[in-house]
Length: 291
Ligand code: SF4
Image (cartoon, rainbow, N blue to C red; front, side, top):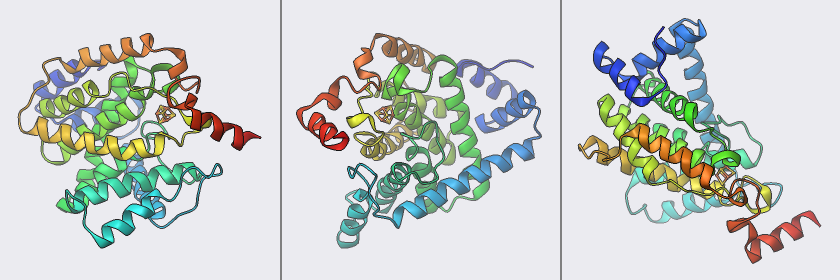
């Protein structure tokens, strides 16, 4: 079996076989893991259902996290949108509320799908679900998009560990945004080259994003970072699907991400020793919380 460890190899396979990314990915995964394709798709379908359940549950809760720092922001947005629609309309409303709903479920210790991590769990589900509802996209096509997102995450993680402690938040929320950008580009009928351009355009805009969680908890800035990244994924999709291309090839962007992670100070990699985590307010919050 030919190994696929770079986006260039993935694109070559898509082009030579005349297939979409999800088709190449599911065949590769099936062969690699010795699991029939239909079984693999069943797992992906279960994950998709769990993502939607987390959204549903998060939309209906205002329960705060144990720290009391987060938990009711999604509700605030829903109340405001009931009075005045969001500036960019219904799809935008859904992307913001769905991503917050899932992130808030995570900080309540609810059931979420880490995609790729718990801190970044709101981005991929919000984008796939909101766009699919607005464009009436079938479950089968949503699973195709999720498999596309998974393949993007797999290839990035082959070079950059997807952990804030190793490469900063660029490797968590950044990778999630890239996965979401690729997934939505696939959902809207983008060609493999456009999907990979959406990935490159997204990653270029999150290089250097630090991981500096307040009180060492995956709450601030993590929860609110999810809707911002979900919107970035849509921006990348719109650019890519219009034919805008990244001047730097996607594999080189991933290399830059890996190098940036190495150059980043350990104080900004989940240690809560720098950045937002060491602001006057964050230090006071920490002292109040743990005293
Ligand atoms: S700031 Fe750190 S802990 Fe929070 S989501 Fe980003 S990588 Fe994860």
